[in-house]
Length: 260
Picture 1 (cartoon, rainbow, N blue to C red):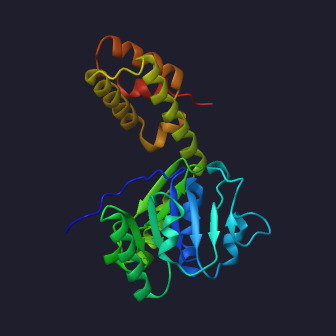
Picture 2 (picture 1 turned 90 degrees about the horizontal axis):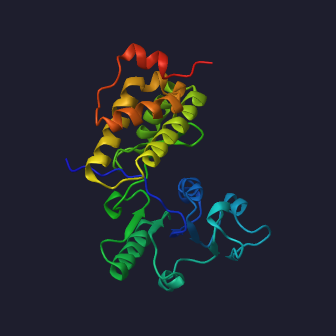
């Protein structure tokens, strides 16, 4: 079985076209806005939830005050899709077709591929053969610092949602995860600083392996207790000796944790 490559796709300030604004599109919409993408919506009928993220009192047009930080819709076109609307921007990073008419969806897909080529990222809702990427079931944890995607490659969106919900039950202490992610990010950033962000292959490999081993030592149970300052001192010592041999685990669990 050929598998999909799951990626965390950055969309900030990139043009995204959403065709349709009804029930189908409303499942995509909440996933798009937090990315800070420059979202254009084309649809004759617009679900009222879309207007909560658009210019107050304005039914269509361009949001002149748009910025990625605001997480708002950039443009709404209240009309059936026309090929000319592809010209609203110089490019579309991704195109989402979310209408119930499968025949029309296929037609739009063909128009987009004809214009932009097979490399154009496009997703036609509920028609896997017209998708070169899929929307999975997303789970945000740790104050959105940790994201998990569960995908069935279009086979069963509902089942992936059930799997996601089971994972959510496992990680019920969101605060500890959030603290862990913050400390691990700080640790990695400071390690790069200590090595002057060296791009030497040996330095990159050392940093990556050191962080990997350190994270494995503490695991999910202890990462939120990391004493970053003490660990940076340990890293400096090990880096100067080019050693990846950590102290015994019992020492790592006492000397380098901050237990308040």
